[in-house]
Amino acid sequence: MVQQLVDNNSDAVLDSWMEREAMAEAMIPLIGRLYRDNNVLTSIHGRSLINQSVISILKAHRFARQVDDVELPVEQTLPILQVLSTMQLGAASLDVARLNAGFKSSNADSLEAYLRTELADIVNKYGADERHSTDVVLYGFGRIGRLLARILIEHEGGGHGLRLRAIVVRKGGPKDLTKRASLLRRDSVHGPFHGTITIDEDNNTIQANGTAIQVIYSDSPATIDYTAYGISDALVVDNTGRWRDEEGLSQHLQSKGVAKVLLTAPGKGALKNVVHGINHAVIAPDDKIITAASCTTNAITPVLKVLNDRYGIVHGHVETVHSFTNDQNLTDNFHNGERRGRSAALNMVLTETGAAKAVAKALPELEGKLSGNSIRVPTPNVSMAILNLTLENGTTKEEVNTYLRDISLNSGLRKQIDFIDSPEVVSSDFVGSRRAGIVDGLATISTDKHLVLYVWYDNEFGYSCQVVRVMEEMAGVHPRQFPAVEHTATLRG
Image 1 (cartoon, rainbow, N blue to C red):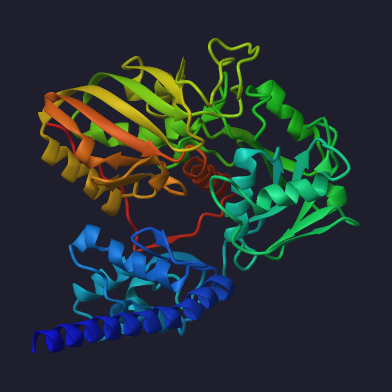
Image 2: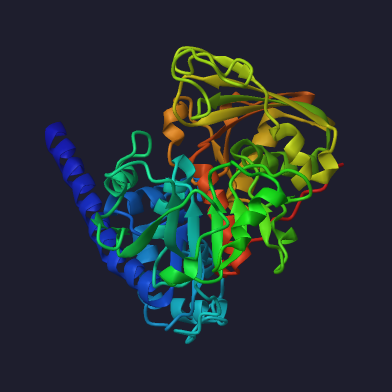
């Protein structure tokens, strides 16, 4: 009898799983058509559904437990996608989970009636995409450049928004094109490219998932005629770090076909250092050169912002435990920087970081309140920032964790801040995170006005996602979001 009950339960669990699999499979073509035909991006609490597998879609539904303490039923989201696919929508970014929650709390007569009201601005606006495509050139094709390429190709959709048109590199030898394509195809940290890659040696292009990327060889940013390749009014993203001031980066603007420049590193002088989600509103239409700050600045500034909003920060120290980078030596050898000549693979290397001071460029209210240092460690990716803060108003571990968890799920900073409270996570678990930083709630230490927070961040991919968000702002191609979510600071006191 007991065995029969066990067997029946096993059958029920399997049957339920297969039903949910079938519904997730039915969602995939709906998600794809909305994306390619309507330029509609769908997500579940910020987790993208575009180009995801059945298992990934089901995992996104399970993530909803972080919000409502229950798994989001696929039988509730599938009908939403089915209705959306009939509404001739204009371009937008839609959070299916939040639409579902809105419908359940509404008095609408039907799901279609609710969606027509909530999405009134884009219903029957098919083809009326106010955005225009913007040509993008990646100047340099190293760690960040190749990840930006992956993200841009993934976002290609129906051809609106940012369009990767070319990369500029110095020729490395007779097999340069093949090697560049191979590095895009395979990555020791981030895994294989999701799609197909071929090369066209006659035209010197890499073709990735239908995106033709012109490979241009040049030693100078000021002498390239991009218009000869059909590229105009381009946004050039400088990944080399060779020039960090306005004078050096302005060389790009001397090349024909260039409109704007974005630096993927902290800028010097009066250049605007932008952390998306915090101060991207400072980007003006006539800005020619912008910088996207550093990976660490992007990771910690959003968290510091919301903590200062609620509790007030008197002063603090930021210690980053950072994966080694290309700037260090694999074996002991000469290096201009202090300590960086010692083997990155064998040592923890104490070095400096400007991230703490750079925070003030995005958050002027923290000017002079932060110090910082960095320890480079023998891991290839994912870093951690330890925020040791003195607050104006005290708190408890439970209170501050609840606050940060809510910010990560229900605010305008949910693309920047993530929250996790698993007792088993380690650095490799955050490879590929699209958030700027992830608060480790179990590690939080709070004794009234003394707070220590641990923030993980994928210093390569998470940062690259932030860079793309800045690019979208510069190009004016960021899609409208429904339902709208704005960050409203909880005032201290």
